[in-house]
Image (tube, rainbow over all chains, first blue to last red; front, side, top):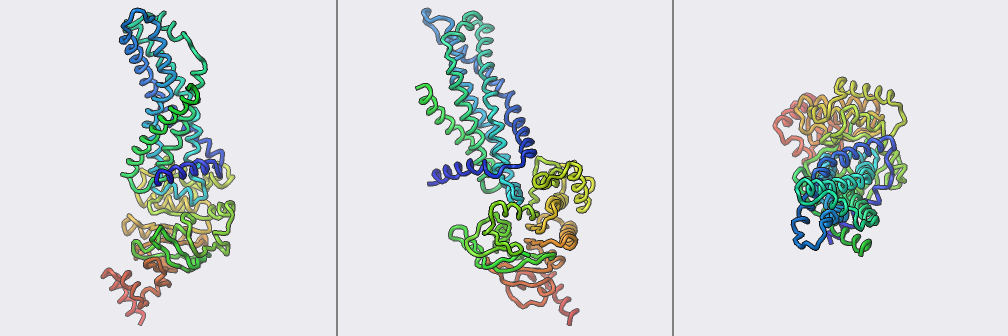
Length: 245
Length: 255
């Protein structure tokens, strides 16, 4: 019953997020601040992880090809497919659920604990629109992060393959061009946009509706990470079945 | 003036407010006092519209809150200033930005006009040079004064304060009490203060409402509180020896 209640409250929160919009001059500042906090500040960690995971995928693929009949360009092909279809959109989103999600939950949760949300409500401001809507807009730029993750993942695979002696540059380039299906990119970006919505709203829900003190802010951040990850994985399964199945 | 009639509020099985009726008068400091758990904060949050209540009415200048349209409620809230127990200043903004916030949200003033108004209210609360500080860099007393500045910056008709003295030393507490009293007199606003600090009661309690177990147990002024024989009130007010002595002196002086 509690889960059903929470799901209902979550959807009401999304509806309320669009009501009574905040003055545009204030909203613009909030959106720019959230773009900086959520998007720009995540670029470093996403770039680092993508580059090295791309490299590891290439090395693992190369090491597991023992049959001489399998062409060498498969390393590039497998790296591209893994990065574009799953690693960049899904696993970067799980990492972002930890980084951005906990940030959102703890910042909104702290505002709840210190009565800052009550202060907004007393002033007649729709606190959901003020707090959650800018995050939702900022995270609509999330596909930009995922594009960088895709590019650096494939580049990391190339660097590991060529400089690690696991294959030639020509084979790798041939691999990443083989059987390229443009719809896979569209599929990845559709997933990314859905995950961006989940990343903005689920952590906000856990921060906004938390009760208690500082300890509960920590607990809410952990719970928010767990549920954001679970919903991302489930959404990934259903979207893959729908779009590629 | 704020009129409250037969206000009831429950949380599940717990009946917190059990039919409170009272009025809060314009230009006066109205104090709600009572022990922890007596329903003071719930009462204040009902007055502010943060909690919905099951029964009764709250009317601001004759306008019943539950009958107002969302736009009318928004207009009403723009006339309310609130000082929270923990100040509730926005962490990510400087003190000047905190004070300017209601002006940015609800007025069409130019930046210059807003800055002038912020300068004026910060001077009014004796913080003329605190503009660029962050709330975390300010002491408890300074944070309370910033909260008061933010509450009055948009010329509210109603000022609500939830335990404005909590966590402050006695000297700073008196400064905050006097400031609230001066602002109430100066701007002729309706001030409602939630407190369990007896010093505040003696200093600024022009009208006092005593709550016990969700009911109004007593109502009067700071002068009446010395004379009352209401056992519930005397047990609370004169629980310390200091106030017992003060009462004795007061009665002897006024014989």
